[in-house]
Image (cartoon, rainbow, N blue to C red; front, top):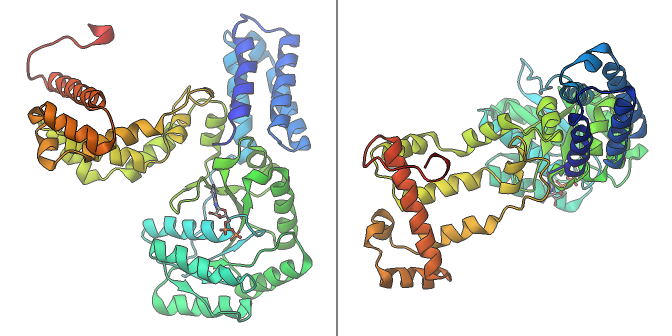
Length: 439
Ligand code: GDP
């Protein structure tokens, strides 16, 4: 995820301040210098950094900070508020037209992730009960139509296409088609080029003029840093866009585009793409992003991910089983699968407060995989009745998943401990002391 370097550097600057009871002007000056460097190294545009540090400095040199009993915390609070302001103070959503269909026009340079993320966005609205239609208006790249059909197919979203027909005609026909077929949202996947050029802009302008979309979303690749910001500026000048979808944030270690786009173009980031898979898209929340940047985690997004991934019915069943002490290895496996659905562990870790700045915490994703393999190597009877696992069964299981008998034993021991703990929490069974601190 983005911002690792920035998080670490900002935290280092704050740490120095924390050691001091009162702050002198030179302490604050030094902190501002470090914040400035951290932002510049994160590839935030120069002018944006200058303005940002100016506002933070002004607020920090006020009496509030100097006289505060916890000046370092007050400064973190100010930086947090200014980061939120920098990225747009409120969450900006797509406004749904009272007269369907709502037409969303996706524009951007080639390779920015327009086709993939347009489909992801349509998928997001489909989950919310909308009936989207994807429209192939990129008539130049031969594979573009096919690509849209493939991703549409994966998401179960219809795709409208008319081959190499004129894009304005396609867009108009698609809207008529949507009206006739009950599609309440239309996503136009327009053509891109390697660079901003006049021919492309004129084509997009004529689509805009003829179709009058409710929303023009510009898709930019976060990994291209300031180039993304420059592209955003040009597109905005030509088309007066409504918002930005920032893709490939998962691969962007610095975060400069995320921090500069709003300040440079005046247009908010509305969505972020966080991976290649078709469900890896999130609405952009400036306050949550600021919290992630400062290493304070993003508990709200974590909870939302859990809610989306967890099957509510299954969760209730599991709770029942736990209460009745009937939680088996099969249930344990189910739970592992649900956690997996929430995404890579490394990303989840960044959302836990305090973990964002811990660059060196490496999650061993394969450990989960090994546990899964062991459970899968058991028969259904064994998963329900782990007590039957004698040494010959354990040997067979270990052989079946390519692991050692000790690994199987370790898993069984952990599972046993977990069951003991559940018994205690349910107030049943012998009152044994909890391991660790409470023992
Ligand atoms: P287009 O030319 O703008 O339509 O771009 P595509 O939709 O074809 O995407 C270009 C490449 O970027 C594809 O390989 C996508 O899988 C990849 N991609 C798109 N969004 C993301 C993202 O959020 N994260 C990552 N890692 N890759 C992405």
